[in-house]
Length: 314
Image 1: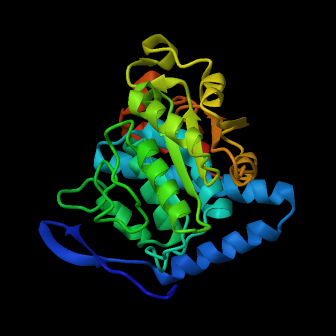
Image 2: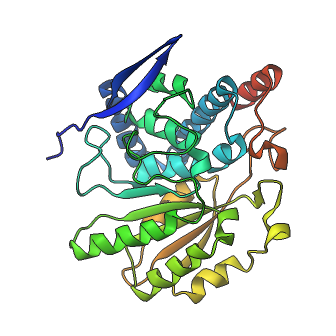
């Protein structure tokens, strides 16, 4: 039943006092998200792109403020993936934030779990929980920890953090959907650096063998990982050919064009899993963070925060 609400237990922090409180959907924000999705679906192409890009930049502002206040986070990765999340949550995923356990929902897995900040902001903007809860990002006992926890946060399908786990779980979820004769799809976002983990290629081989047309993998191809370029650490190219060799349909898209990402993510094949190589810029939207390795997990100073917010403003 789509109106069933499942409640989650989590901790909020309020000054020196720690207390337990229910974390659940926020009706006004859910209504706003639904209205925006409806508007985007019926708008001309240029307006759809503008609305989704503005949503992503608003989310980037929230991330920058959140990470600065918390004193920890992976801000460069959060900023690079945000347009991808905008495309998924505004135009692609069949979900119901007021009923996060709806059986026929699409499954979304953020395999690059260190970008939890970006995911939390996207979920809050959709109304899975109040935006005010973001103030507790990585606070002691907070549900919004440094990596997503499916037991604590509505909208999180799989606990991630150890790299190379998201795609194998997504393959299992896609097989389960087929066995249940369900129309739901499974979407997974991978960091490019984590493709150096061998478990991804075992999963890719199994997905191709099983012809999982209900599976879409999106690679956040920003070409940087902690401390170095991906191609200097362990070369990934030719990435398109590697996925294609496992019987995947592969498309290369501009990862900062939400409309292009959404269109490609919805263009699936019944006989093959789909992989989108989404070319992105680490630290996207803030000039002094873009393509800078140190911003993988650096925290802005107060002056840097103000400069970043000014660049991301409408």
